[in-house]
Length: 339
Image (cartoon, rainbow, N blue to C red):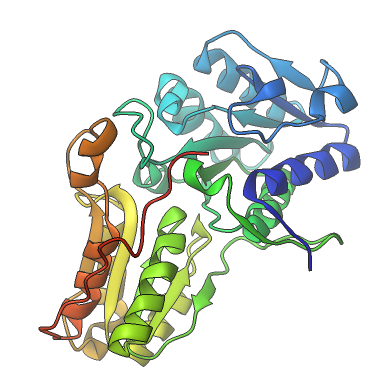
């Protein structure tokens, strides 16, 4: 199977879906040449009627898209940075998420909001956040968070075809990663987790860019300490496939949660609680979380003191297994710079 870049996979998904359905259009600030290289060729192929550069107003972008979705169109919004979502949050949290329910299902809102997330790029507190828990606690929204090019393309195609609003979270540091993607048509269903690495000793629940880092950490844990980790990637946070997570925990008896959202009230807190409610008797040790500290994300080299680091991930695995020896990852697993 061919291998392509993560951002190219997103680009392919939009090309295919815009060709398949003329109600699909792309909108955002400078979206015709977007920051992350996902819009190549769209403007040339579909023109300004369907690739809409906008003024700098997230409220206008999101508000017009909610209205268009209710009228039968299928907008794909590019927010450039997920942080900018809060500038127009009312349109999604109080309108898109609720109006299908408020109107008894008489309207649908097929809207995709692409929101690039994440740090490790030295961009500071205004351009580095992961806001998964904000979306996760809002009923009426679906949430996708792909970790590979295969999932990025398949999930985006599913999101565009869905009749509900979807928050599509793409990590900036995954844009330049490569992976196998079929040339033939496929989609990835929502609500189906993927085991990115099978293992027997400890379950690791990981999302987005954390999946990539944890795969590297797990390789060293296996080679140097003989520890077998099972990495469960939920792929979507709503709907959330807890059945796969619970089954893995029952098998390994241990759980580490690795997520870039804040530790306080973040995704990890919800996952840990659901495991406690459904698999407590199977755990041989307390659940361990590796997440961002509850601080604004510092710029440049200081962000390493706030965001999850590979060494913390390895230490957490060793701790839940009751191992007193330490795996030193110095120089072995590095967080990538922004592409």
